[in-house]
Length: 618
Image 1 (cartoon, helix red, strand yellow):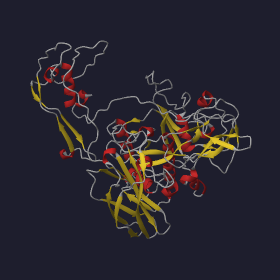
Image 2: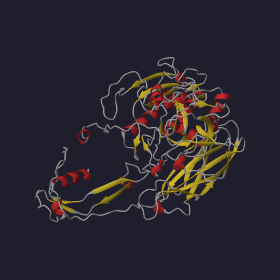
Image 3: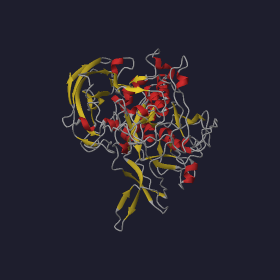
Image 4: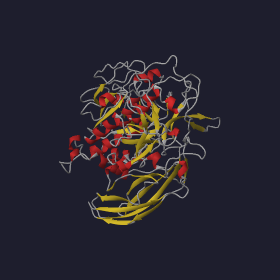
């Protein structure tokens, strides 16, 4: 890579690597009998307003193209159209790796058929169903759902591409992150799951969702899910969600209320990014989601019908994508190339504007009856499809990442734009969200579950009321003081929402905020003495060849530089610098005697140490 970087005209070089495919977080359940209840839908479209968009606006996402980059789609499933190609629900796609590609066989054999006929998880088919399934009126054996349902945008056109994407990553320096940014600039909105590492503490999101051109999606639990219940001798029904698939005996299935419904899923990865940027940005329904699976998976898992409940941010992401399809259909589905704005007023909104609309009109949720969830859990809140379409207010920027306590600005300004057709007065207030504490005193390992408390920042808002005519924009200035109980040594993340309530229809718009209330680094350093036994050679070790630079004898320092959070890479003053003590480098390569204490100067005589020094100095 270093040789390629040295070629004139090379801007950047990225390694090619494989990432594990997405896996479901719940087991398969075989439904033996049904009690259909049309008044208790298994997909919470009523929570997001999607049901009203379908019923009142007759908007089903007609004609909007949604590309699913996943394990492929079983387009033969009746709920997904039953065919592939022009005129079908799954109209286009491509297999980028081939049916036999896996962790053991890395040979890619591309073809034009994106069928999901060999995946144990049917992940792509489940995702496609959340976006655009129409599982109504189906009487084909093996495909009759527990209850009729439709996806978010059942008239959208699906494109299927079989390709593994996603992985851990805190910084925006990979090729997939850059690709997401470039695609979004061309008018194609990119949604990515933020990750399923919520049980590993703060800052556990993944790449490429951290891209500046990606909408990072967190998960909330579905308030309803098909569930099992036991009937006691006195006819009492005891509902439960099994931790594993049961043995296949006859069970009764009913739609039940999930206790954690409408709250952040425990598995959903937590922000911020390594650069303290605002991710995740929005939440979708991703816990306990009922959707389509492939015939192959249904047979493999002994399912009576090709449907299953799965959980993951991978389920929340297509819900948000489907919502965007409804929005685009509402405004006439302008093509991506119109994002340049030259065709006003019928252009596709820019990526920045669509994020502003999504976040300004989202619905913040609680982690308990009284405490709003930290924005590191939920972003701006649950996507509100109906208010997105009927929005009368847009706030810019629609998120505030306040950096850390040392570099937090003295004040911040935001713009509020009245995009409705009436003059309104806004009442502007701060609503605090839970303080998240990521560490425990005396332990520098992240807590697997942060501690949440009702400790809120103090926010000065000027002005606190504002009257705006249609199309008019106003400016609000915000000043923040961290929560009194935020201990800067314990990685506290404080957050909240600035809410704008208009006096005409009481529609609420808001901007989420987030700050890492830390001052400097609190990690412990463990030093190792430059003396001890030196092992000159090791057995059974493979060799690695790479380019090195020989340094002449002399005095040297190792210099490390790190760009500050929110820093400008072009500004030298935005880097933190560390320089090591001076050491003497002598290229005599004298081999020390084994098992003898060795000074730093002797160790530096070893060529393998010099190679590593050259790498660190790069």
